[in-house]
Image 1 (cartoon, protein in one colour):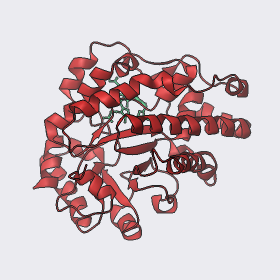
Image 2 (cartoon, helix red, strand yellow; image 1 turned 135 degrees about the vertical axis):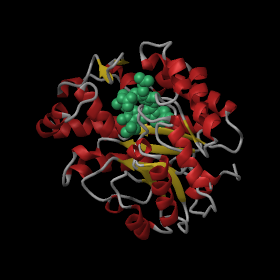
Image 3 (cartoon, helix red, strand yellow; image 1 turned 30 degrees about the vertical axis):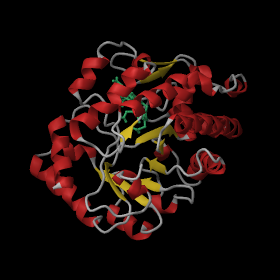
Image 4 (tube, helix red, strand yellow; image 1 turned 90 degrees about the horizontal axis):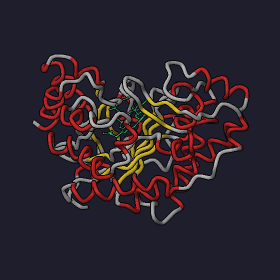
Length: 343
Ligand code: CP3
């Protein structure tokens, strides 16, 4: 796929106009998404329909002509495949009927079988069939830490207190679980690549729960275990890896490691400062605060151009938001942002 601006950027090459895609680009802010979503009471049932996933992944590509597509699925498919019983119901976030409540639950886990996620790999194939030939598809997984946090908490939460207590009381068992998840993520991403994805993103959405050496001990160590496995495998060795850390207590420049191709910057990071340190070593993706999209067109235009101006000579820049787009955003505001990037 030679004519992809997105893949060129991941290869640290300059583009006169930066490629753009954004986290959660297929989702509830789009009326065409809602039209399909209303047919399913449980979001996960929709994720298990490969043809529907392909259609959903294409929606933002068709609407905005974005430079990359992301697989339509969820990070929580892995804990679901480990039999934790995931459901997403009306007005609630994710919920596990069978969460990890004790160290014994980790011992009792059935071995991970990547074939349980066949529906995801079929979705990759279906999406590749529909995508224009020059638009790459991004595969993804949650970081082992972020998956562990949801699995222990039993779903989403403001403070993840159960997870924090579990970490303090059972650090060794938690690490055992993180190792299981690292291997599962590796097999999962490997199969996504075999099915056709062109790049991989790892979402460490709960990095900010970890302070001081906890970030290394419970998150980065296992993300690195995963990326080592990917780099040692000829199937995945050459696939670019993007890392998103949500507002960690350390700066992204102090976290990155060799196997990562691209840092996906949280909106709290100062992109200018980060760019100075990462130039010619890592690609950068980011990092407009998604809340800016609630502002006036002028403000969206200005803030978008500010980022593009700072990054105009950076080899390997991809425009993105600094976290996922939220359901309250007007799709027309997204068009304003894209026009500001491409004008
Ligand atoms: O375009 C895309 O990015 C679609 C694919 C995608 C989804 N989730 C679909 C989804 C991706 C890449 C994800 C990643 C994901 N899922 C993350 C990491 C990114 C981040 O935002 O930090 C996390 C933490 C999850 C877990 C998750 N999935 C939660 C907490 C929720 C409920 C709250 C919410 O944000 O909606 C989901 C549901 C979910 N995943 C939806 C979509 C489109 C909404 C489901 C609905 O329509 O009800």
